[in-house]
Image 1 (tube, one colour):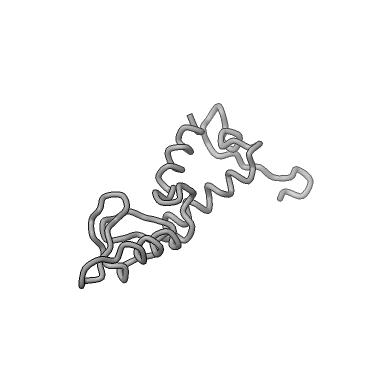
Image 2 (cartoon, helix red, strand yellow; image 1 turned 135 degrees about the vertical axis):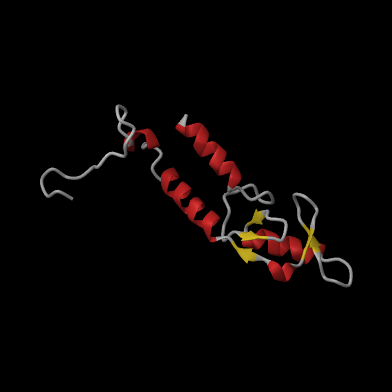
Amino acid sequence: MTSTVLVDIRDEVTCPICLELLTEPLSIDCGHSFCQVCIIGNSNNSVFGQGGRSSCPVCRTSYQPGNLRPNRHLAAIVKRLREVALCPGKQLEVIFCALHGEKLQLFCKEDGK
């Protein structure tokens, strides 16, 4: 169950251009988010017309490249997913009590830390 949730979350924070976890995510006017490098590259390759607008690679809605906004919430989620991925032997189930469903309070018995 938990691994399914992690896959779903990972899908939500995957860049639609490079298909990797978002790096320095930026959101555009339509609400879609991309890696900074990916969307800037897209903007440079697809600027059209006198207005200097580009189109979203997902929904084709036009956006102003100057309106790119950092998405700190997605960046924080990606950071946590990467931390979980660094510990492949540890599953999220391990940190929750199987009986009560509460987060386990783990510490060293000797020094209490």
